[in-house]
Image 1 (cartoon, rainbow, N blue to C red):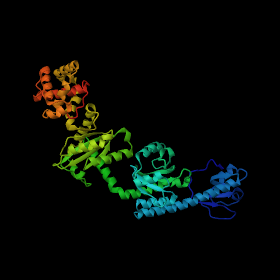
Image 2 (cartoon, rainbow, N blue to C red):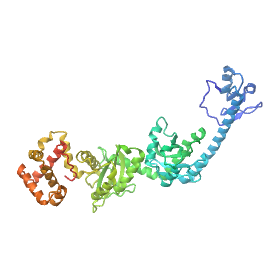
Image 3 (cartoon, rainbow, N blue to C red):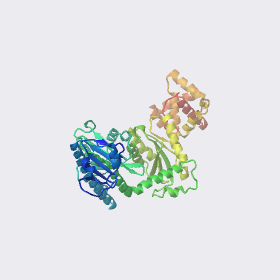
Length: 514
């Protein structure tokens, strides 16, 4: 096939006509097929787009003078084959246009996503499912069964497993593609359970505005394929699904955007103090109670993908009851509020300990506050708790700011002063004594200051008898000359321990030392 250089290859046509030796009406939106021996005798009112058959190459000047776009074959079988293939493609396009109209009618009739999935499966004669952007399955076709045990399991379970999502690596597949372009994804035997069959699927993003809110997939066996014409309709179908998702989830999407903008304003340095924030924060039905906390969760690098973040956000929201959240700067920020008669911090800490037992996740919890104007200040507290908590107690996951307030002050002072000048020299003397005599007097003093009014608790942590504790404390007073029952001396000792911890002179964890 030879294409005239001046031909516009992007020209679109409404139909296909094979020209014979008779007069007929001509149209520029039609692509004509014709033997050159017939074409050169036709009386043409205007330049047309034609594909010709000619054993000898027609002159370029003739074609430019009589056609708008032109190509020709010198082989009759190839010429006929091209005509038959394009006829088949046009018939498929006519069918797909009719199918798109039927799909639009379903959307107008407010059909369910399952009905829409069944309609799409009927169009493509292959199973289909629709997922949201956290890869929870919203709908699956019922008319065309899934042929792989792995796919059947996913659809019964209601979500795509995280390990499969990581194997798919959608961000890498999107490189070089537009946001609406389908991706062909292969699932090889090595990635699947032993009983599962290999498969592939055309995964097409569903967008609302410029945000990907989900995907729909057409599933095929490895040896099957979709004609290019059908692939080109996938983004149009995704647009139709988007319309239905917007109708169903418009409230939810607006609610998420509303709270994101509201939080962003409350976290701004230029937050308007007369912004009626309490009234506005309740506009979408959130019950704002008297006692409030800000909780900040650092998103681990290992799960900084859309699925992982969404799942983590939902899981933490079940711990931080009566909360709303936004995701900002690789952190999830929650505003939680409780009745003043409750003791939420103790409950939150207990639930966090259970949830984070096997997770690399750090959470900072602010002091409680009552006025919504304190959101920015208390978000800074929660972030500060994580920052200093990872220095003093890296082995734990949850850092209440009230337990780290003094540590944070010492930590910040260390960036501006030589804080060793604030450290009691008697404590250094005690450390030297321990090194020389292989004793644990400094650690005993540390545990005692952590539990000054509960000697039984200190003894339990030190694994010693009460008499031994009192003997050690008397020895410490003898060596240091300090009366650590004096509140001012006790406070200075606490600060000194923190300074020694920052300077790595001691390496004990101090989560209970306030």
